[in-house]
Length: 155
Image: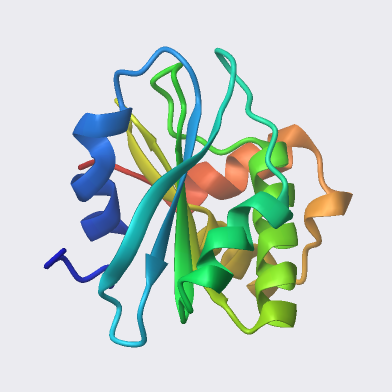
C-alpha cells in the first residue's frame, strides 16, 4: 500500500469508513516497515457488541513473521463513542511492554468510532507526564483527563 502511517489522524481517517458503523468490536493490526509503510493490515479479533478478547500472542504473531519494525493497533467502538475504556488503557500498556520485549514498537492503539477517534498512546503519555498510573485512578478522573486534554478528536 502507498499510505504512510505517521500520525493517529491519518490512520483513523484511513480506517474510519471500514470500522465506524460496525455492530461489533473489531481489532486490527497494521504491520509497518522501517519507513512506516504498510506491510500488512489484518483483523486479529472480532468481539461482541462492546468487547473483544485481545491476547498479545495473537497481536504479534504475524508481525514477527512479517519482520515488522512497528505496529499500529486499531479497534472500533460500536457505541459510536471513541472515548477509551480503562480496559483499552490496560490492553495498550500490556501491548507496549510486549512490543518492547520483542523489539517491535507499538506506535499507537487507536479507537475509531462515529464520534471521532482517540490515540491511546497520547492518553498514556499524558498520564505519564502527570505521574499517574492507570491502575490508581477512578473512572471520573480518567474521563476528566480525556475531556480536559481533548483526547477524543473529530475526523
